[in-house]
Length: 196
Ligand code: GLN
Image 1 (cartoon, rainbow, N blue to C red):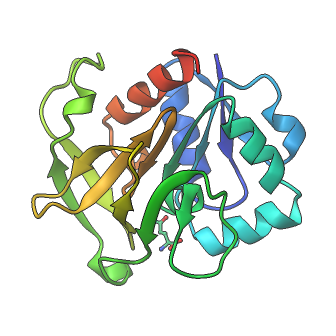
Image 2: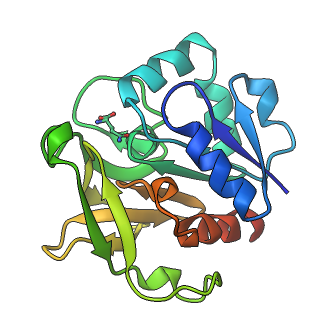
């Protein structure tokens, strides 16, 4: 099984390491041709403006949209911003998920934090773990609005939406690739293999 990780900027290597650990071959995607034969794609955290501009420069915007209409795609943090239809400012986006995102919603880099998140959607993802998911937020966005076809996957205790799914598209504000907990990657794998 081969899953792509968009490797223009950000922590694509960390996603690759987790995929490897759960028995998936990670493929770094920098060109449209690299999407061939992949079961799904992860867009990593980093800086969404930089990733977006590079995607434009590399002619990737339309190929990524076309891929997403046939496959599962997961955006973490900056990747979630790229998946959104609206980031409340002008920057290149894939405009796929019917969500509005607010960038840097929790403050600056020094305001990064970790919380234990309740995510019932993860129950049944078998890696021998149970209970809340340790979620790391680094200059993270929040999901301000979800459209009618979007399922909320996780919220902070105050109700803030930090993970959402629309069909086979998944957006998380936080960074599951930076914890030892593979459950979100396994959950995404299920989206990749369950068919359109
Ligand atoms: N602050 C970044 C942005 O707005 C996202 C940060 C991250 O991916 N950790 O693009």
